Length: 133
Image 1 (spheres, one colour):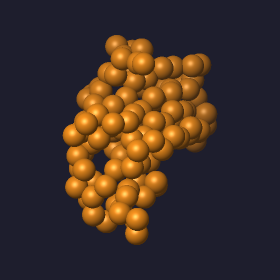
Image 2 (cartoon, helix red, strand yellow):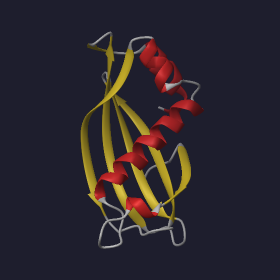
Image 3 (cartoon, rainbow, N blue to C red):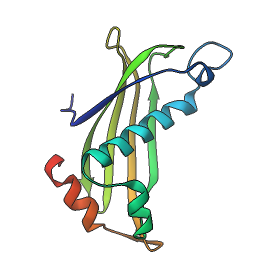
Image 4 (tube, rainbow, N blue to C red):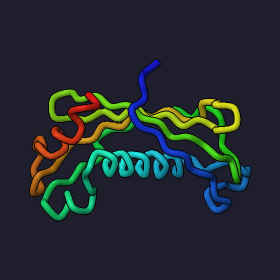
């Protein structure tokens, strides 16, 4: 298992559930994206401000595993840890149901940076993430 460097709590909203009464699989991507954006703020950066500077972190690859479904009104904890490989940042993200710590979702999300539309490293992201790598 890994050492998580950031976590946030959220709650399932009714409109995120499908006809089976469980969270639609696409919503886990929203949860993990929101967690990454909160982590970025925690590191002192703003996703919107970085975009204005011409630096965009974009998803290049996802490896997703759906383990235990979340249901309406479930509280959950979204946790992550981070590694860097070359110019890629790999966010390892797990979502746990808060009531019993059941693993509900696991994702490895690889991001790369586009600087003014070109694939490149980002000194801003490197500096912000350095304490966590």
